[in-house]
Length: 141
Ligand SMILES: [Zn+2]
Image (cartoon, rainbow, N blue to C red; front, side, top):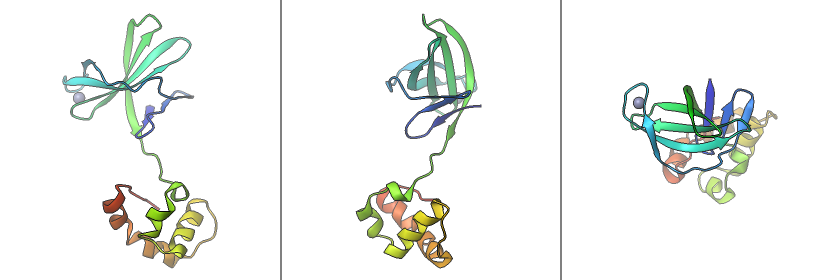
C-alpha cells in the first residue's frame, strides 16, 4: 500500500520516500470509489514518472500515476499514515501551560524509550484533551 503523511504530504511509494514537488490543489478527475471529484493534495516526480496524491470530497484517497509526458497510467490505492507527534519538538511554552515539568520530562523519556515515572504519564494523559482543545494538537503516548 502506498502511504502519504497527513501533514507533510511526503509519499511512501514502494521503497521510496518522495517529498512533494508541489502542493497545488486542482480537480484532477473522479474518484474510482464514489465518482465524486478528486482534488490533488500534492505532486511528486521521479526519474520515470509523475505521481499525484488526491482526495475526493468524501475522503477517499488515490495515487495517480503518469509518465513524464503526463500520459495517465493508472490509479493506485493510497492511505494516510499518521505522523506521531514528538513532544520534544513541541513549543515549550505551549507544553508548560498545560503540563508540569516532570510530566513533560517523562513524556519525552517515554517516547525516546528511556526510563520514566508511570504516574507522570497517567497525570499527563488526563490533560491531553485540554491540550488538544487549546492548541489543536493530539498527543498519544
Ligand atoms: Zn470517493
